[in-house]
Amino acid sequence: MSAARDAVLAKIRKSLRASPDDRARLVAAETRMMLHLRGTVPARAAVQGGAAMVPFVARLKAAAMTVSEAAHLSDVPKLAAEYLRVNNLPSRLRMGADPDLAALPWGTVPTLEIAPGPAVGTDEVSLSKAFAGVAESGTLVLISGADNPTTLNFLPDTQIVVMRAADVVGGYEDVWDRLRAAGSIPRTVNWISGPSRTADIEQTLVLGAHGPRRLHVILAG
Image 1 (cartoon, one colour):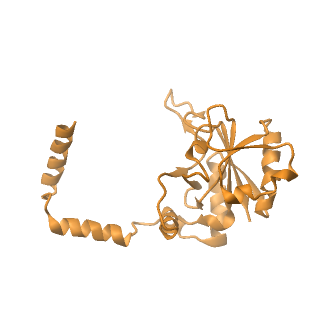
Image 2 (tube, one colour; image 1 turned 90 degrees about the vertical axis):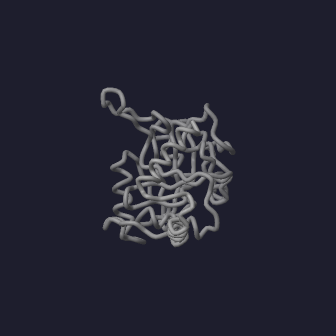
Image 3 (cartoon, one colour; image 1 turned 120 degrees about the vertical axis):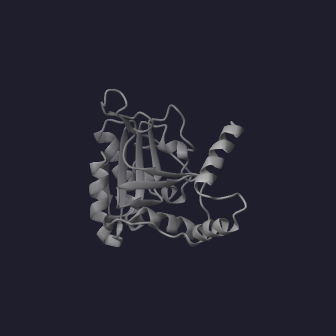
């Protein structure tokens, strides 16, 4: 495997007329990465603040997600319970250690059971908090860690994602700016644009192939 890789890389270097000790190319690459230069940004990503909300919600729904709008984060338990009831789903939620979610008034909805920790194979519904939302494509951005374990995004059949309206940005580049400003890049950044789906077999769309078949977003604020 190593020999094959070396052969491929050697052909690439030859076609680029480059060499492993090409200092000028190395400096140019390091400089570009340090400056975080942006590529071409489409016009539909050039929105911020309130202007980003309408296209963001429209693209969430176009990607087969459902949306509830909450005036405040404190409304999340009530809306989550309502979503589970309407869809005849279990009232048990698997949730990480996110402090914002933990501080919500879960006691006001006694029918809900909150199970802490990473998701396991038997969990049917998870609750996560998104780091950001992208208006350009209706994409949810979730970062890994004990607060919101990545297993919540893949194992349960239904996922509820909570996010603040203030965290909706125009394009992907804005998300990376926010991640860098946060101080460190997480181990995993999941970009989720709708429920899991595939059409590999006879081009028939099937939901839930590699993750949740239902994805509900509670947009707070």
